[in-house]
Amino acid sequence: MKNIVWIISILLFLGSCKKSNTLENQDEDIDEGIENDSIIKPNILLIIADDMGLDACPLYSEGEIQPAMPNLEALALDGITFDNAWAYPVCSPTRASIITGKYGSRTGILSVNQSYLSKTEQSIQQYINAKTDSAYAQAVIGKWHLSKNNDLSAPNDFGIEHFAGFMGGAMDDYSNWNLVQNGKAETCQIYNTTKITDLSIDWIKNQSKPWFCWLAYSAPHTPFHYPPSDLHQQNEAENTELSMYLAMIESLDHEMGRLLNSMDEDTRENTIIIFLGDNGTDKNVLQLPYRGRKAKGSIYQGGINVPLIVSGKGVSRKNVRDDSQISSADFFATIADIAGVGISQYQDSYSFKPLFTNEAIALRSYNFSEVDHGDDYRYTISDGIYKLISNNDKDDELYNLIDDPYETTDLYSSTNSDDIQAKQQLISEADKIINE
Image: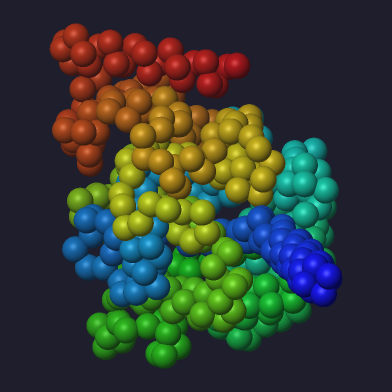
């Protein structure tokens, strides 16, 4: 009898232990679920360099003299370098295409003289807020250039919760400029590249939920100059515009590294970083193989083919190059997709998020860019092999970018059947884009 009582007691004890362990495991699962839920949405850091073409980036073969950019190169080692990303040839249209997901012919933003984005347009920030029940904190820090300079509340009117930066396209002095924060202006005498980095660091540290930070550096836009000496490695004795320009890029990389290093380990690991040049290099510091007019402001490759590097959370492809066609308009759908909205296309924007994990995906069949110099509208379209340039119905051009990546041999009048067929197809597709 005593043995039976003893056995029953042991069984009851083991049962209570199992129940206790089960409850503990359930608690752990709940805790883990809470933790996973808190990190399911990655932070998004979009960094834009101003007037930095492929010839000014050490990750590309163009340009004989390149700046030291160890932080950007580290991002590329841990992510993807895109070789076929197109922007607009000047800054406002590129920024408008990112924030709206639309080509400039739909927003009316086709040049720096047409830079006043209508407040009827829906911004990427407004879209994400609406689709995720405001799951993201979001800010734009740095250069704006999408409204009149005296319209100080314009960024906030587009649903941007926090704006701190510079309203116009260029500043006269990087060490004496007008800082606008949520509609209020003050004079700032801290070096611009450093100050907007400080503002980004402070804003990110104060966030308690997932965040989207659009960080738009003014560097290396004119006026060309040497930044504070601790921010660059150039020899100031050279005193050339190219040396100054490269020094400004190096200062951007230095401060970008300081921003990334300021994040705690958990924040950094949960952040996806997208680095983009907004258009090609200024003609005054342009390097071969690009020449003269094939620079910023043009729809040649030197004006629109820009650096694009993606690294961080959710990017499993490491130290690879990708030749997929990417448009600056694609950033809208991509950022919304990263934020969990669950879309692959929006307006003229295609999400390239699938490329973060899979190289064998075709996103867009045609890349497109355009510019309007007053009454002189021009566009370019490419299928990834051929590129058509329409110069307002005069002296149109056709190039094979595989055989002739720097556009030296015009095939527009070619009698080759492949060239003729490609030209006709590109003209037809451009007509659909412009007139739909």
